[in-house]
Image (tube, rainbow, N blue to C red; front, side, top):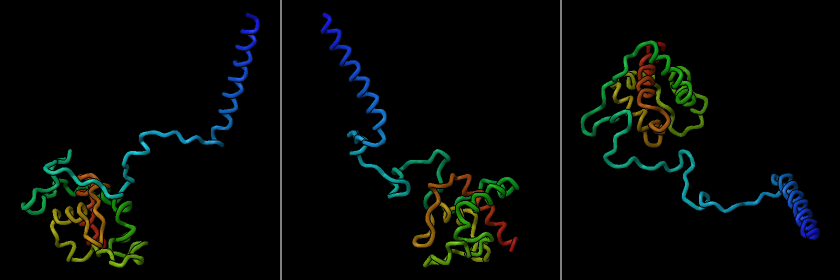
Length: 169
């Protein structure tokens, strides 16, 4: 019986020593445990986003109805909307279109296709819905779609802010 107690004591001490050693070497000797998360397909942000399922409607409602023209702007161009649009423009658009929207942003010189001048009549004469669809869907080879980065309300606020760029010119 005494031998059994001594063996249990020795194994307990060895177990505690092994546990302590394991804790100190955890960051040095990393053991790669196989998990099923590592062997399933995964997607990095903005890497081949999955297509929207057919006949689905976003939570905010339909963006626009096909073959029915550009949508109407449901957001009034008040101070709040324009201020939010200015903040969103500074975050998402200013790097290409510049502070005043003339297409001279910090990375505009590195682009093959120069960004549009948002203060020109050709841009300002477009309907709000047309600008909204351009922001949402982008322009192939020129501008990425921002529908994944901005909510529907954010895009309408951007449209309201873009309308103020011609007046500031």
